[in-house]
Length: 131
Picture 1: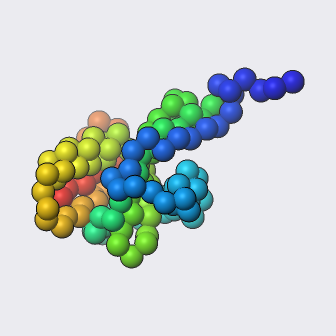
Picture 2: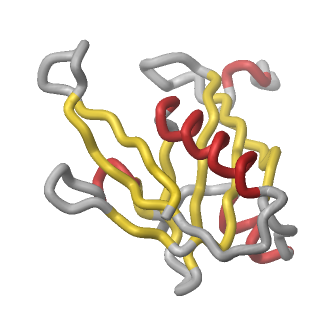
Picture 3: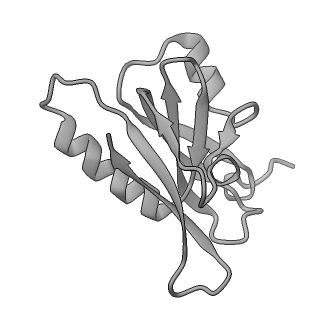
């Protein structure tokens, strides 16, 4: 008997700042081997990323505890490193930066910060700013 598609994990790339080649499409459709921003960034040590590409992926995960459908953002740097997050705060801030920079011909990157939440005691969130 076939499984209902709503019960199966799926992901689909829905945006890339620059066109992805075949290998990149495969690499970024799965998060294996990509560092989670929440694990890399600390309050004491923000992360500066010289942007090479930004990829957005829509995920359907029936096993997720915080909702089955969410967006994952993958940011790659010029050295080939890749980082991902599903943080809504980070995604919203990055979307604003991309929109503001879309007509600019200057090189830009982001600095990623981890901050304590003011509303969730003991929790942190990540955000970013342009540099």
